[in-house]
Image (tube, rainbow, N blue to C red):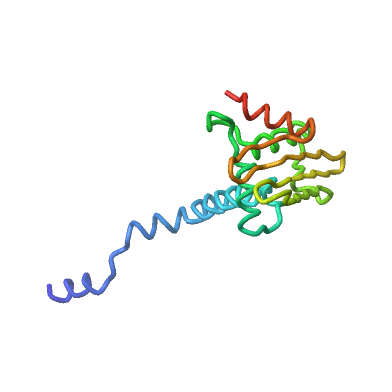
Length: 160
């Protein structure tokens, strides 16, 4: 009897968990790969902000005042979202931000100690859209200098 007990102790018990994993490991790996691929696509998707150059802290503050402006009630659509929506309307069924011919130029000019002029030029293979605003750093007041800019500000101001 002692020999039989020793043989039972010497033999490792087969783990049901290991057998379970061996059978299903390829399916789990395939599932993980699909999740990783789909997450990579979402994380690497380009947007308007990805085209902006590096700014000084002062310029960054001015750009934030403009792009994060979300109307007098401070809720709803931001200027950045409104511009992206306008571009998506102009280029439906296209990933215009992934196109090599797409260029975005953002210029910040200091008018006086409190006021800045921001010019955003969006150029693609189909044409160009130009926006022009004056931004007051102290009062955070935004003034549109052309019809396209005025449309964006009105859209943000009256968005429900």
